[in-house]
Structure formats: C-alpha cells, structure tokens
Image 1 (tube, rainbow, N blue to C red):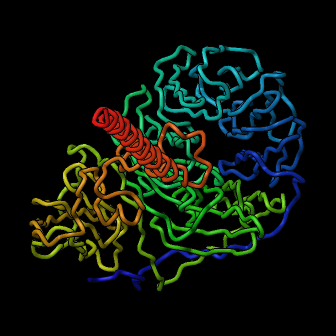
Image 2: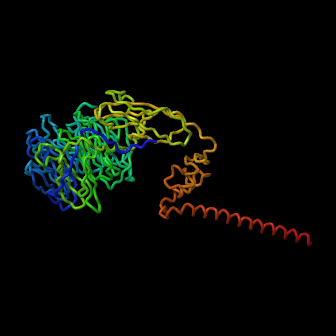
Image 3: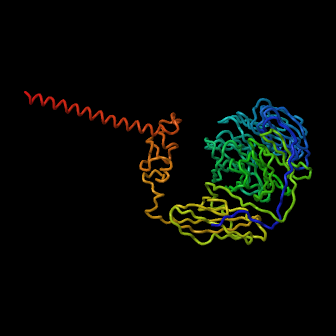
Length: 591
C-alpha cells in the first residue's frame, strides 16, 4: 500500500503572508457582507457589513446606515458609471446606498432577507435590484420605483437570491423559483430538504453564468445535499451528499479555478471542511481546514482573477483561524488569532489587486483587515487534496478526454480478491510538463464517483468491476487508466457476511447493535431492523422512546410474562376441572 503524503516540488509557487489588524468594532454579530468598488477603479476596496441594527462600511469608504435586521447586502451600480460602487441593503427596510454612504432610496417594512443587483432593462448597467423578502420577491429600479412583485411564495422567507445570464433564482424553504427578468415565473422546483445556499455557476463552459448550484440541508441537520440546475430550471442530473452540521452557516461562491475566464467551480464551506464543486459534480476538499465559518474567492497571485480562497473558522471559545489557499489547494498561509464568519476580498493596500480581505468575526464582534504580502518562492510543499465521494457521477458524455500533453497515469495490473477484502488502488501519475503538479483525481465505476484522492480504498461487492481514474495537472491536461477488479465468493467460512434472518444486517452487526440475528424485526413493530430508526424500541411506542431504549426489551418481558402467566392459569383451570370430574365419578362409584 502506497500512502501519499506531502510532495515536495521544485516549481515557482505563490506564497502569501497574512498581515492582520483590527479596523473597527460591530458590537453585535455580523449577518451579511459584500465588497464594493467605492473609488470606481475596477477593484473592490470597501466591505459593507450588515448587523441587527445597521450596515457599516469599512475600507476606502467608511459610513453607517441605520437598518434593522439586515440579512443581505449586494453591490450595485446605481450611478451607471460601470462600477459596482453602491450597495443594496435587505433588512426591515430595503435601502439603496451610494459609494460614500449617501442613502439613495428606501422601501419601508418589506422585511428583506436577500438581495442581488441586475440589469433588468438591458441598458448594460446593474442598477436595478431584486430582493427576497418575507413574503415575496420584489424588483426595484435605480430610483427605488417598484418594477414587479411575486407573492405566490409557498414557504416564507426568501433567504437566497442570485443572478444568472437571463434568470433570477430564489430559494425559500424547500422551494426553488426561476424568474425571467420581467418577473414572470419560469419554473418552480421543489426540493426534498431546506435550501441553505445558492451560487451561480458556468455549467456549460461558455464564459457566462448559466446555472446554479443549490445546497440543501436535511431535517436532522447533519447532511448537506448539493445539486445543479440550468438557469431554466432543468436538473443537471448529478447530486452530492455530504456530512454537515447546522452550527456552521453554509456559504457558496463561484470561482474561475483554472483562470480560463469561466467560473466552472463553486467554493463551499461545510462543517467538515472547505470544498470546490465543479460544474460536472466533482467535489474536492481544499486543504485541511475544519469547520470553516466562511469562505470567499480572492486574488492572492494578483492576476486579476478571483481563483484563490480565503477561509476562516468561526471560533467559539477563541477567535479562530484564517487559512489562505491557492487555486490548486496549496496552503499559502494561515493566521491563528483571527477567524471569521463573514469575509470579502478587497484592495486594502491600494496596489490595484483584490488580494486582501476584510473579515468580520462572531467571537469578539470586531472587524479586521487582512493584507497579503505576496512573494514568489521556488520551493513549496503542496498538500494532496482530498474529498469524500459524491453519490452520482456526471453523464458519460462529459467524461474526461484521454492522455494529452504528455501526462500519464498507471493503476497497475488487474486484481482478483475474495469477498469482503479491501482493495487498495494507487494512481501513479506523471504531470504533462516538467515541474508540473497533479491537482485532481477522479475515480469512477460506470457513472458513480468513488473518490477524489490519489489512493482509493474500497470493499467491492461480488462480481467484476471496471474502475477508472482520470487525473488532471495544473495545465488542464488529463490522462486516464482503468483496472479490472474481480471479487469471488469467500466460501462458507465467511461468517462475518452471514445474515441469518435476511434483514440486511449481518449477524456480526446485529450482535454489535444488540438486535436479534434470528429475528428480522427485533422489536416486532413491523419495520425490519436495517430500516428501523430504533430497532430496539417498537415504533408504536415512539412517544415513550425517551426511556433510553429500554422500553422495547421491557415490553418483550411483559409480553412473555403475560403468555406464561396465562398458561399457568389455564393449567390450574384445567386441573380444577379434572378434579371436579374425578370427584363426581368417585361419588358415583361410592353409590
């Protein structure tokens, strides 16, 4: 077994030191953040942060506007100069603010939850705004005049709203709405779980934002589901299921990961880490950060493209940490004194590059500037990226092309194993150029993604399995190889795989779970053990399940006590009848 750890490469890499300094105090937890270009030079330089009572600007422009319960802020071009130097604030009121903090207009008591600026009239300027509110989706022109309202919202609180090439997509509860710019509903898509985040993405590789990635959370609050739709509401056919906990607020933003002018990836923060998700449904972990509270694209290498990542842990008993990563998952720097739950990339040192950031924290409720001191180095350590497997792979038509640019990969000879044996496959890959980097691995069997690491470990079911790996280097070149895995029966001695009651759980697992390996429904509530949320407690007694799981066994004891007791009573009754008969006969004989 080959274990891939840290690979030392002699290749020019970007490094960044993070210089962090406090620049203000919020007094309360931050609720929203957006970067604006207040000096209209084409690079964001100011962060607008929302709270429960106001919106505050930090950076080149500094101002405060009173707005209750701010949930969303978004940059806008209200003055039509071609720069996103204004901001729309979605709170108790909807407020439009100019570059210097001048209030332009206010729509009162709409209970705004989310906002996005758009070019609804086709004049080339994003001076109109669309706002998700408590009970509607509302659009306004640059002067604050109402353009349209959509009020047929099945579940209240439109907490997410984004813009694509020709659609507005809004999320409320478990419902996804696709609007034309005119305000008419293009499509509605019901989701199985509650929508927690939406991000636009270039699904088709055309250089435009033509779809969305939607993240939902199950009712138990411990699993996130990621799906993609075109801007017309058509599903892309792939889905990712991943562990998550609700204490970390999910965020998602589009990135141009490969600097091609196409934002074909989305960066997402979940409880288990920060990830890239591609337009083809491939999920790759970014570095080793755990439980990030926020994530934002940033331009650490100063190439004018937001392809790098800054993420911060929320921090509970301490402030937390900040982590900086390149577009290929290389850890550039970290800072262990300031975390962040709201992050925006801005130009803080006036070098014309959005390689700095403003971070708002929840622990101390303060605001910090993060200035990156970028330098080049010829030696770097590049961590291997890892990611959990997704549930569904892209359609076969999107499969990666064969070897190009000299890149190669080898999986070794085919393997034959017995049932229950863990198979280890290692992709021995060579980049296409001297000094290149292998940046991505995709393991598949048919249309199912098995993993995204350099090494795959898996126990396969009986039969023949064709496993393929596709590797990608930092130039975008790809190569693939396939290996055949044959799994044969382990024989009758394979006790660990025995399932005596055919309920889907092996006897060994049933013994560990405390269930009966000879009874498919241990608690006899009509649900087989492998499908029963609590196989030791009868489902009909769910209201009393708070007795620590002892009720099921107790009921069994009571049941058998009743049966045995009834039997004893029956025996006594029969015995008395027999004695009565004998007594009568004795009397007859005596006479």
